[in-house]
Length: 330
Ligand code: GA4
Image (cartoon, rainbow, N blue to C red):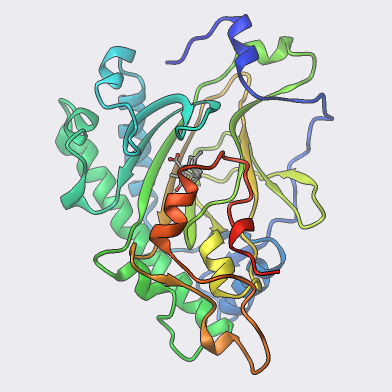
């Protein structure tokens, strides 16, 4: 458990006093079993870069089991958790995010999604209870990946891309550079003494990959930035997934979809646990708009780059940086 004294809170990002944001009721909801799901997915990715997915077919037991295992890990003494860190980038981390000075009221585990390359540190992650935790992670990621392929194929169809697997093939590739994150945001009772300011759990950013699939417990905290620049709070729903468009999908759709800026605020009394699968392409993949999304005369808005080049740039950036900016042509 992260315990910090009051003065230490000053090290963290505090947001100016703001009216308590009511939970936003306009988040698009996509029911994966309905015939028009692909149209709703495309509209949501275009207008919000974000949507909630229901009737997704992933058993709730997989989510609940992983949540239980993850909390067992985060409830261990700090010294034991530290043996699974520091994150380089994989492993356990606390308060520091990335290596360029970002901090947040959060502790986390960042894992590679290819089981054979679970880093050597993973033996400390999975510790004395390796079987249960590892199995829970593998079972959950396996189901989420399959669901994600379906979403990406519907996206391609909805966009009128003839090759249904234009996006999903990148995640299905054995060299897909995907990762998985468990974030634990301990409650912060001192927030009440911050004169109405909010403590940032995870600062604003867009996700660099193609797509991110988030599931959280029923504690709120996630906010997204709408197209008009307003921040709204996403009502939590522990049975659903929240899908984020990442920077790479923005490029592959030549800006038709926009990656969504999002952040997480700490809660005064409840802890938040989220699990996020980040689906990325192989390192050598050239990232460019799909030719079928470029009618004659449409030019790419972006310079061509490989995912490896984007990753290199990403690791020298701060969380809130506009990472796509340097790759824009105009
Ligand atoms: C944001 C999305 C994912 O959580 C992540 C993050 C990564 C990290 O924690 O190592 C980064 C961040 C994320 C982008 C900029 C750099 C790298 C922290 C940071 C400051 C795992 C990812 O892929 O990019």
